[in-house]
Image (cartoon, rainbow, N blue to C red; front, side, top):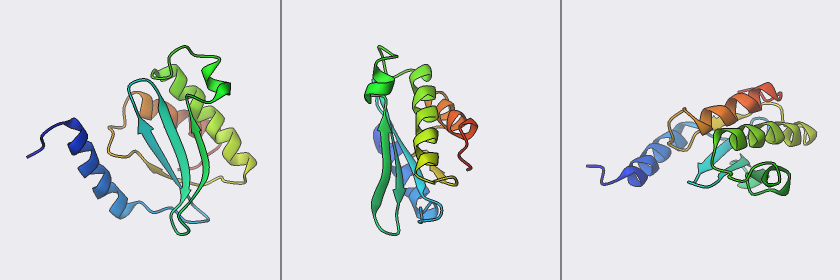
Length: 120
């Protein structure tokens, strides 16, 4: 029995991680969502290395938005993530929603990253 939302999300994340793996050619985009901010990482699971990390706390995003925990900030993070990933020659990724529903901030970030040029 699921005791609360967090334990349920962690169980879903573990199930997702059995299927979603990042490689050098196609790394994994992982999202963490807190109440006040959103965090992203592009990870090569084969080597266990983070290739790129970005959040709503970064200076480029934080100066535009007072609160990093809303859809507009998530869109800005997605757009900036796509730009930085393309500069590092990362075009194709697998999306790891980390047990969160594909809705709201998670969906906004993913769609903005797609529009920015990332393929997933």
